[in-house]
Length: 123
Image 1: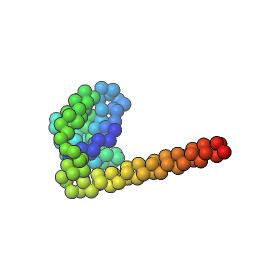
Image 2: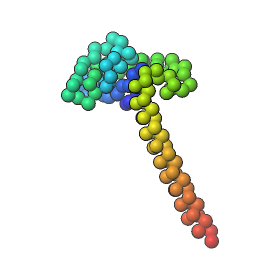
Image 3: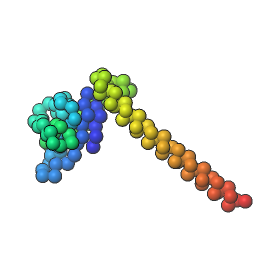
Image 4: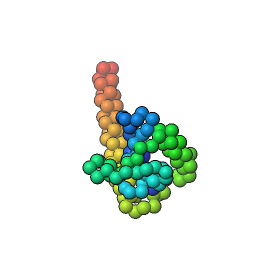
């Protein structure tokens, strides 16, 4: 699961060796500590995410739940203060908007095809 927060980007996956834990991963130093202050973060230079911590599932669920309950902004991108992070998040936003646009175009094409096939069968 990818989680984009105003001050942290996290990837959270299962810990296959300890089912009660999740692995919280980050690309930027300090992101894990900002969200999970007591976590023991290790640096893993040969892995896809440079930083990771093994955190109890209940702790992850509680912390992320609190983050959600504490949302007070009405525009996420405007709430991201760090310039570099905001630029990267905006690129992700743009890419995801392309999926929406592509899906909308495909939906319109399908609807048009359906209308065409329906109108031809009435003739």
